[in-house]
Length: 217
Image 1: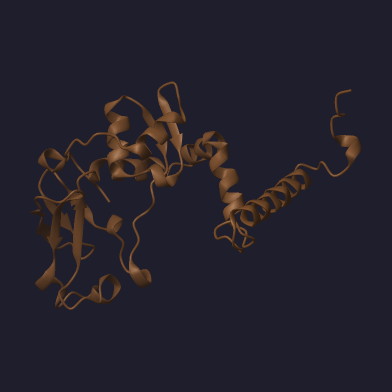
Image 2: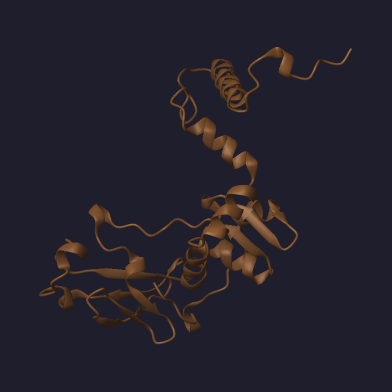
């Protein structure tokens, strides 16, 4: 997806709590954070602050393997969207919405389109919604497609995010409590944490007591 200057479709918003969390993980003039901090308003706030945001942005998705948004060419300077069948539609501005700045409604153009089955099942045709932070989101997705960027992100993103992911991927109480009562839930989660730590020690090859540092006298 190619995106040009946002022009009047951009809007400045104050940084929220997610943005503050992302900035708190920053070092110098760069910031690394997990994908939940990759919201458009956070990216804009970091950009305004002069911070290089190494923040992962979720890729656009579409149901059942249809064309995703990044397969459309969005030209914000011209105010148009071009579909994979090379049909160009003007962006209709949206006012009074917190996140949406405009929408391109292909409608009738989808009726006899040879690519319709690959694009939409809607009777009214395909619609492309334009975010108020479209430029920042697209720039971030373009950056994160670079192998060097991905390698740097894996190496520098906050380690706590990775450890939380380790806990959440287990079915043993990581995402949802398995029992009732604060004491029981706390004990169960400590058991999960201990198991995760033991698995990590095994991964590091620390399988024997002789390999561990002796306790201080």
